[in-house]
Amino acid sequence: MNITIIGTGYVGLVTGACLADLGNKVTCADNDKTKIAALKKMIIPIYEPGLEDVVRRNAREKRLNFTSDVKEAIKKAEIIFIAVGTPSLDNGEADLTGVENVAKTIAQNMNGYKLIVEKSTVPVETGSWVEHTIRVNLPKSKKAKFKFDVASNPEFLREGQAINDFMNPDRIVIGVESETAKNLLLELYRPLNTTIIVTDIKSAEIIKHASNSFLAVKISFINAISRVCESTGADVVKVAEGMGLDKRIGRAFLDAGIGYGGSCFPKDLDAFITIAKKNGYDFQLLKATRDVNDSQKKLLVKKIKDALWLLKDKQIGVLGLSFKPNTDDLRSAPAIEIIKQLQAEGAKIKAFDPQSMDKAKNILPGVKLCKDVYETARNSDCLVIATEWNEFKKLDLRALKKIMLQPIIVDGRNIYDPKEMLNSGFRYIGIGRTLEK
Ligand code: UDX
Image (cartoon, rainbow, N blue to C red; front, side, top):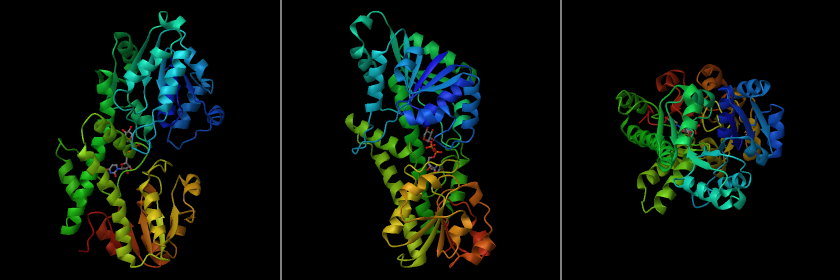
């Protein structure tokens, strides 16, 4: 099939590369000329394991190309995916300017039947507005001539495992209002051999917001439980294990820690709360989820303070900056917020992350960015684990103890066994499982 993806961010690029890999002819279009120039030279703007290989292979085999000529890309394709950004406005609402602009451009460049698919995460009823926008912006001469459909096909891929998530999804959701749209999308996704849920457009839009919100609720739930564990001496990791074995609950997304971050959960929760409010529902459950998430970061700062007494001029080493492992994404990363809070109290910060050091340079003034774990730990009063990168899971504890000023580890992701840490001579402070009471 001839496909155009508008927007070459995380979702757009991965979707384009993977759809090309399934044998389609894909054009990835973006009006950011610098980004497209880089992509043409096979420079991938994000760190995503496996993505570069898929992009290179499909570009070589002429199934994938990049252009900043969005109009031409629209004319070439039968199926157009809208994958532009939908950032948060100050009031929490999603900014849909990009989506509206794309809808207008599609209308003005219509030259035959088009299926327009929302891939970006958008609030419910965006599909109706996209349809309306295209209809009113279609030149008069084209109105009777060209038919089009709008569909919703939310993406559930996770950063760090995006290719695998795209190729092996738990399910594919397509929201459609016509048989043509349904059949085209069923045909497109047939090679993936997975369950395809066909719904109306609004339900598909809500499935995306509801799924991300539910996962956020799960994380905040276990973080709230961790508070009770901490004050009673229970171990939240064991509690999660015990709960998770119940098939109705499941173990996934029950890791207590410093909370969720990234480009999706915080933004999607805000957008869903706002859209619910607009429709007359006060989504208190999601507001509480957000509050718990914010409090986890403050809790970590308090734990560091309790361990070090005054923070002013204390040297704190932070391991991990990205919002989760296997990505260089620092958007809404808990580590960044925590570092800022520590700096505000006068602490001196050193930090190391395996992938995001380049990005960190611009957003962490005053932080000494180190070349590895050991440089970060040297002469530090305390070492904070903020992201559970694999390479932080097997640290040379003996070496660390020698070079730190005080052997204190605050493990914001519970990757160590408290007993092992204690036996190695560390004061170990985890989340919801601290040994000391
Ligand atoms: C998420 C959704 O999982 C994905 O389906 C959607 O398409 C986009 O948003 P992503 O943001 O890439 O994906 O990350 P995810 O792996 O879901 O983790 C989100 C955040 O939750 C991370 O900060 C992670 O550290 C945190 N998390 C996750 C926890 O704190 N505890 C957990 O048990 C799981």
